[in-house]
Length: 130
Image (cartoon, rainbow, N blue to C red; front, side, top):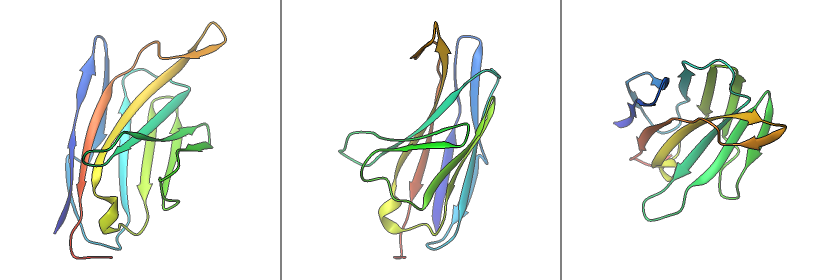
């Protein structure tokens, strides 16, 4: 069995929660993770994938636009805006084993800055091949 294990964290007045809390997945299945914030004005939501011993790689979703670092496979997709965002992994593969982080951003003074953010961590562990 493979597991998505999700943790919620908060920063100040803003809370970000990923659901489901725990989900069992098998190679080849589709996994959807929801990232819901208590702050409804995020213009940009970034998902970060970090493999053991490696640097975080960014996959972002912003009002339907996508933004992807090299090394993030195309079977990862994101959607959403405002306070509700979703990361979908279609056809989970063994090499998708990593930690996944969700961060919310909003615009400040016409410049994209990290004005307020929280972080949640998802751990996806795969075994058994794809």
